[in-house]
Image (cartoon, rainbow, N blue to C red):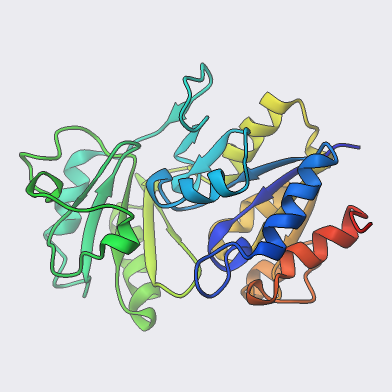
Length: 269
C-alpha cells in the first residue's frame, strides 16, 4: 500500500542544527522511490522551509503556518487554500508587547513578513533580509496576514499562550514551533495541521488509514490523532507520546524519523 508520510520539521525531521541530515534525506528519498508520498507539514512559513522541500525533491502539496496555508510550492494550484487572521488583532497584540514580555512580534503571509523591530531580526532565522518595508506598521501591513509569530523566553511561553487564548480564544489558536527556539505561532481559530494533511491526502487519493505522521510538539497533536499511524519522536513531549500509536527509538538528532521509517516501510536493501 502506498503511504502518505506527513513530516513535521522542527524537532522531528530537522536535527539540532535545524538541518535535514544526509541519512534522513536518503531514507525519505528512498521512500519516494518506492512509490510513497512525502509531504512537509510545518508551523514555519514557506520562506523558512522551502529549502527542505527542494532538498528532498518533493512534488507534493505542502502545509505551512500549521495548516493556514496549503499550497503547491512554486506552482499555480487550483486547490490552494490560505486562511488569514484579522489585521486589527495584530496591532492589538503588538500594543501588549512589553506586558507579555515578547522579544518581537511578526505578521506573515505567503509572500512576505513584517516585524515590529529590527532589534531581534536575524536574517538567517527569517531566511531573508529586512528593509523598511518589512517593519510591522499600519502603513505596511495593509491586509489580513496568514499568521503571526511571537518570540518569548522558554519559561514564559505557556504564560504568553494562556494570556493570548484568554483574550482572543474566540478568534485564534496559538501553537508552538518545537525545536530550540521558543516561537509561538498564532493562526485563525480552527486551523490545525490535521486539516492540511486531510486536504493533501484527498488530492493524492490516499486513504486516512494509509497516512503516517511524525511529530514532537503540541501543534502536531491533531495530526498524529488523525493519521492512520501517528508516530511521536523520542524527544517529543509526554502529551504527544500519549496520543501517538508509537514512539521512535531515537531522537531527531539521531535520525529517529529515518531509523523508524526505514524499518516500518521495510526500505532496507
